[in-house]
Length: 630
Ligand code: AMP
Image (cartoon, rainbow, N blue to C red):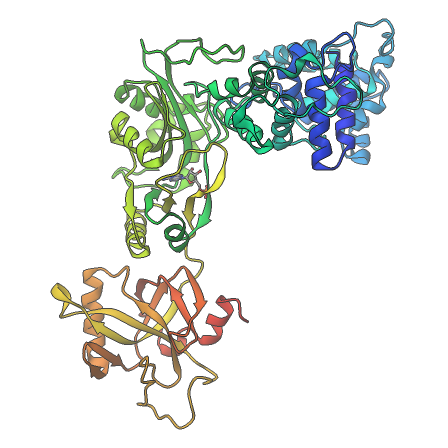
């Protein structure tokens, strides 16, 4: 395909602003872009066209980059624009127009160089040629690489028509401005190659042969959503839009289904949403609770010697050879290759794992006792290119693996988390994070307490039945929001514990000050208590806390509170309002149960506020504010 044709089609794509029209235009470009001319639409260039539309030369899993910054691009444009133009002129125009593509187009770069104008005489640039030149440019390294890149880019610009120059400038900077995101390209691929309807096209050429074998004849793709899901799934495992487009066109749904993970080809990390214990219990029933480690995400790919590492599928962009052994490779959350920076993790994996794997985990900096250090410490190691040995001495690392995407030839993405976790424990038991199944919020709170006590960030709450969905920030992984605020409450009552703890108070009734006395009916004197919830006058109750209290703290609280008992009924006691405690909670909700009219959800004991007396405790007005009612 001629590069000019792609640039012109891209302008047409950008001219649409509706989601559906844009998708149809993209689909038409992928399937029929040649308009019946000599080239067969995107044809052999399909993977490149797809990547270019997304502003990429390499697929997302490929760690190569062009490494062309805005300044270098401006200089190349300036040089191609002729002797009277310098980078400062380009910068001025950029300030006016705000966008490099429009600036490059306005210079008429090809003409300035005395080369034949677009379309007459010069060798037309093809998509394949531009791709090749940009790949060569990406490979330039070492001394003088910047000027060699500038020369290469200059050479390309001098061969560009205005619309090609705009496309090229945007492409090298990865800012296509076409209104085409990954979702549009995914939908466009489905529409172009899997849609039961002929792709709507402007002309009458929509029934081209390039539509592939797939059109509508797969019973599993009854609905358009199924086609999109099939493409999405293949994208998740391959992380390569170009490759998936070709598969969809040439082999249809069956080809997409045949795509699998490959050791050495990173996939996008599954992400988490914020959530709390209540959300997790409501949504999952039983909740898989793991420590949330405060480090840096790492995806580990490893194929030990002598073990087949590959699914054998053809791919010109494959990293490593087919069937090749692959030393451990470590990828960051953005799929940058960080292997060189983390040699001890590399060695750790190589020493322990003896089957091909893809693992997901977190690398944490630890002190001499093995306790976790703050996240900033791991960053001192993560992307480092120099002084690696020295830093290895200075900052020790530990790997916590929490998921297993592939083990010994089995793709596990669709297996439930509990099964993946079992495989993880098999392949790398030393580093496998603990996974605890919890059925209620109290059990989750206990895990959280333990994680925090061990110096970690909190907990992740996961659906034990869920698949691994690369790149998805879904509801199957919840990161527990830290308590936004704590509350300083007054202990106004308690219940004696049971069994082993019968000599200690177990559950504590919490109150806040009711400054305006709205809940304090006239005529009550100091000892009158609200018969239902033991709140003394001037206080309203907001909940009970029994969680997060160690045996030691319980004994201490009992010692402090026993002298304050003013009333005892059965196992329930009321106290003079004197002791202030700090409690965490997940949220405050309205509730008829307590006299404040609000209840703390999942209150958790933090500690005694020695420094506060009851007049400093929190008030009902503050509760209202927290609850969003004020
Ligand atoms: P955040 O960075 O706050 O969005 O939290 C999500 C991140 O927590 C993930 O991307 C991981 O890097 C990290 N993390 C730590 N521990 C875990 C775990 N057990 N499971 C999943 N992610 C974890």
